[in-house]
Length: 396
Ligand code: DNO
Image 1: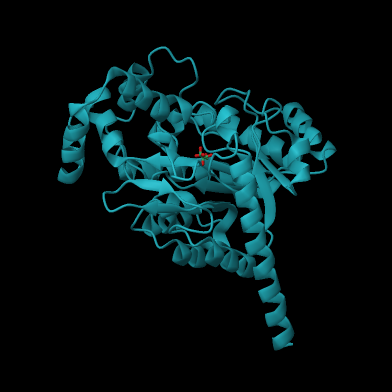
Image 2: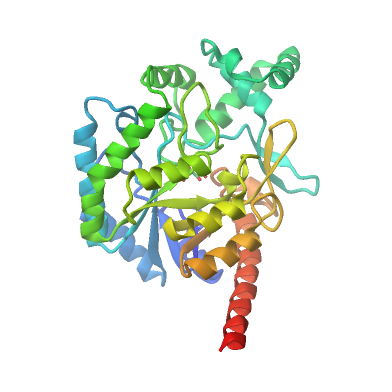
């Protein structure tokens, strides 16, 4: 696997020089300064590519080229937006950047309720409390019918939370769910948003009447429209699974499980239509057998996120150490190295440790924590490479 790292561009406090020193080979990034829906020009792409190459690495993966909401809900302006998307893809292809990650999650990109949940040893991780998320849905967003979408056990927890909720804790939840997790991934919300909750409600309205079948049809429409450009320029599209892998806010989600992945791969059966195997997002769903999914979908995977979650009996999940949790990263590396060697891989979110927490890094994207995780995964990769070469020698 190629050792890659998500870098947020020239303003990232973690510099390309630092990444070179820790053995990173490829960079995962985006033109973060270009607003969603606008064309990525060849000039801007080449500028960033050249900067990365001047530091001895390559621009391996785009994460993300965002798909606008109107394409997802199927608004009247979607064809114009898709045309622009195609121009951006062609420009990326011309510049030799050929792996493109995107997602098809309505309104909200990834979700967490707690960004510095203590591990008990002085480090912290990201955490998703089902109860706090439901509290946000029912009591802050005040979405109509929200209480019917949550199970009884979660509603009991929500009622407990409501007893000693404070305006400060509510504000923190809004900040974590809507701003801190979304602001840096070119989602719908940015730092300094004046009324994020109201904006959230407006965005939800756009999806009135869009059910799972409709969202699937819109994804198929988008993929069919862009495939000719992908074929022409050798671009491999890889959708990021929904995080967490379940329906939220009454919105459909369509990349959550085996059946979903099978559906979108078969709906547009072109090798350029593929998957970002985000082991973290998939392992956050107790319904997913992550090693089995890797075995099944490695041939259509173009990019791998190595991260692992523990799911608690109450439905909460916590990001685990990279060598622990449900994802079973050792087994995943074995599968990918055997079935599709050389795939770009980045360690995903990691702990905050040894001063990371004072640096103001983007949520999940610490330096020391990710560096440690990369070292662990590198060790797994080297061990698996040895296993494979020994097997080959024995079979020769
Ligand atoms: C969060 C990320 C996601 C991901 C996008 C891909 O840390 O995994 O924001 O980059 O969903 O489009």
